[in-house]
Structure formats: C-alpha cells, structure tokens
Length: 198
Image (tube, rainbow, N blue to C red; front, side):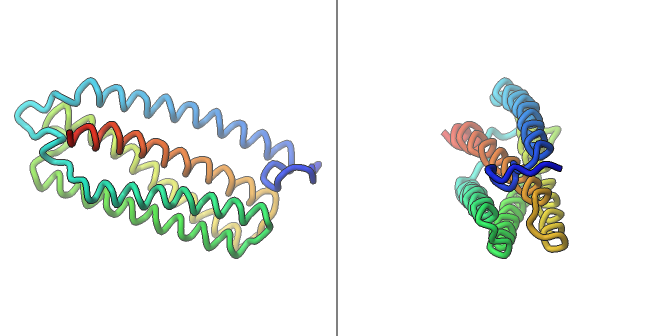
C-alpha cells in the first residue's frame, strides 16, 4: 500500500481516494432520492382531504430545536475532522460523541413529533399530504438513525485500532454523510415547515 504523505490522512492512499470519490457518487444518488421525495411532497402538499394541513399541525418550537441540534452537530463533526487532521484522536472521538448525542436528541424530538401527529389524528393514510410528509421525514429520520449506528461503529474502530489511514478515511466519509443530512434538513426546515406554517 503506497502512502502519500503530502495528502491529509484520509486521502493518504489511492484506495482511500477512490472510496471518497465513490461516496460522492453515492451522495449523488441520495440527492436524487430526496429530490424525488421533495417533488412528491410539493405536488401533494395541498391535498389534505378531510385531514389537517401543515399549518394546523406544525409547531415551530420543536422544529427550531431540531434545527439547532442538527446544525450544531454539523459544526462538531467538522471539529472532529479538524482534530483528526491534527492527529488528536481523543479530541476527535469527543467531538464525534457530541455529534452523535446531538443527532440522538434530534431523532428523539422527531419521534416525539410523529407521536404527536398520530395523537392528533394524522397518520400515513390520513391524506396525500400526510403520506408524503411522513415519507419525507421518515426517510430523513431513517438516514439519521443509520448515521448514529455508523458513527458508533467508527468510534469502536477508533478505540480498537487507533487513528490510521483506514479509520481516518471512514471518519471523513461519515462526516460527508452527516453534512449531507444537515443540508437535507435545511431544505425540510425551509420548504416543509416554514412554508407550511405560512
């Protein structure tokens, strides 16, 4: 395995560079997935039949809290990557743990929100609007859940194997995934919740 010392640790081998490139291609497919879900939502947003509209069920406080938690987690994962590039494994792991805790807090609020909607009589089958809303939010929530499991697995590998080209590459790719989830959430916050509250 040829190591390029002029590159950051996560890019240090050709295999690592190929993995990062491959992950960018994967994110392209994820963009297509979420673009489709947003399109479906925008087509069906006003088709709530006898069920409530977004303006009737959305509450700004939990959404602002979710946004704060997820955007802060984007900052902390950036700090984790910075610490990784400085070779500070302990600090990197601390920032990754904070990132995952913030992500878990986000997920907890989103699950509570889903229970609130169901309690108010809004389910997957209430209307076309509710179906598209639950599908979009549920898909994003499933991605966050996967991210929490993935990040935990990387922390275990860092603890076991230390900071090397392999764990640095995995951690960097995870950070790309986490930033992607934050970008998707900004679109959900802006075009689903804020627009729905107007």
